[in-house]
Image 1 (cartoon, helix red, strand yellow):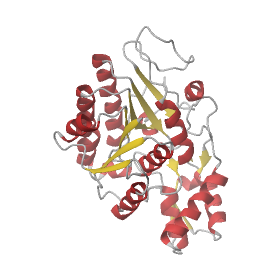
Image 2 (cartoon, rainbow, N blue to C red; image 1 turned 90 degrees about the vertical axis):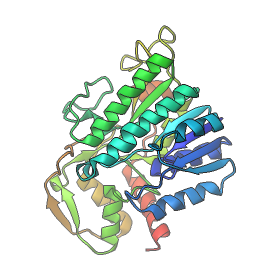
Image 3 (tube, rainbow, N blue to C red; image 1 turned 90 degrees about the horizontal axis):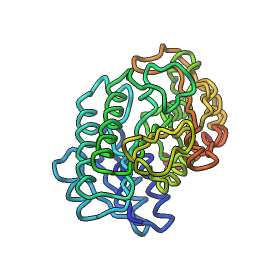
Image 4 (cartoon, rainbow, N blue to C red; image 1 turned 180 degrees about the vertical axis):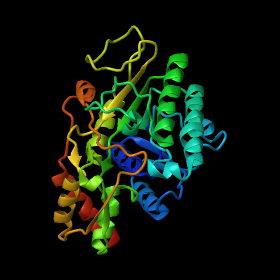
Length: 336
């Protein structure tokens, strides 16, 4: 199999590319190395991938006219996994243009490129933030998602809608994922676990929103990558073909398109996450209570019924295993 992975120097893109390369597949990894967070960490991830046979790095931004069209025309991949995006809930309040450029224009450019050079399966990363103001838990893919709280969430919802239209018009088998709070080695420095680890090790206080009562469906990166890998082999059928996988299936009646949650299905309180992190590091944190920032939600919880129907048993690493694995990587990488 020949895969194009966008965002291959990102957290999830790195782990997925490594998994595919380990299976003997060829991976072309595209990344723009934006400076939203530490570019050196992104370069280090790509350097790790470049040591593996079958990896071809390409540097470029999604919104560059013609770049994706030309790249797909040259590479002719069997699958495309679109993970590149402007991430971050809170940053969308500071720099909304970055989300319009990468998540809207960039995703449109990718869809146009795949229309010109069709692939066996197009897979796109969305977010649990798409559920917005929904309060019914767990979040089910069949829930209405019409109340985004940030431009980040709105841009991902727009990408989902654009992808469905292309799947319908051009028969492109497409799966969109909604990810839930992914963490693990080589993680993103803007995420809470990474920020807390850095501050605790530096002897600095940490800001804990909502007094630690907020809940997140923490998803260990290896579990998420395993789910993506197995879904690669399950492209949605064309209308009139194979029926729904279960009652909760989001298989479109007019397009080879499906939306799938990828989460652990076991939310944890933020305070509990900090307890486990303190134990893994071996020192307590000074906690400063702060109110929940605009755009953040009080809790997330993924329904995994559809995912389980599609891939079988859903992997779910507990935070008591996943957080110590992250801490070991962090101490090794930063030598602290």
